[in-house]
Image (tube, rainbow, N blue to C red; front, side, top):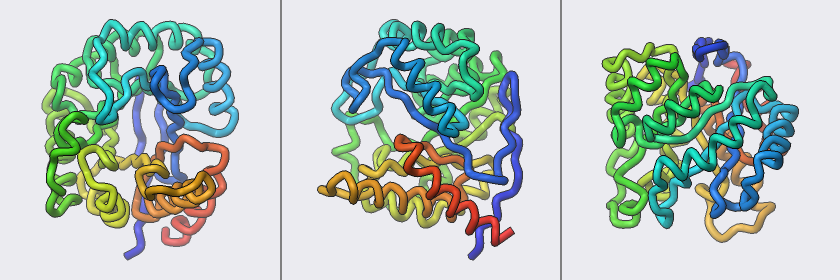
Length: 281
């Protein structure tokens, strides 16, 4: 069945992003010293990287100070802000695109939104700190709701989800309604099925293949088809092709936004997938 993306306005505090005509790109920058390739947290280096991504065509820059991995321990809000605020101060008014911050903490979100961030990417889908919804509403910010089964330290103990896309659709619909009940307008919301957030690697294929099921929730879908989530024991070149296949599948299944690390390499892949998708309009 051909997927047709309709145009949707994603409204932030100071701008509106018109989604649907092409695939939007979220480019992440990790501020954790334990993250691959980002051991230097110097704000000047982060600024240089953000400017580079902006110039390369990123639509949103996503900053993350607390990794969401099974082996990492939760980060106190004070430490998270210690990593984020100097970077946000340096980035203020320097970029042409909005800044997103990945956090589930209301206190962190409040501070970073005051510093110019316009979107919060909540890995928990408003389940860990539901009060975060009020913070989003107070700042007229955009909100990305992720799906996660359990918590990172329990993922290894979870059995495979039965009907994984059905579970995600049900939980994402509930997350959207939590946001609406808190007073957040629907046009500020995006949902992400959370590849590998408590799901088995093989289930990521099912999620990508049946992504259109989430379209019934009525808000744009973002996906982060990180190449390492899709294949095991591959060399770097094989991983690149795996990531390209994952991005293509996500777009042709209805994703409005993709979150990708290797922006420059993936841009032609996105252009081809958009070209194919536009033939179905």
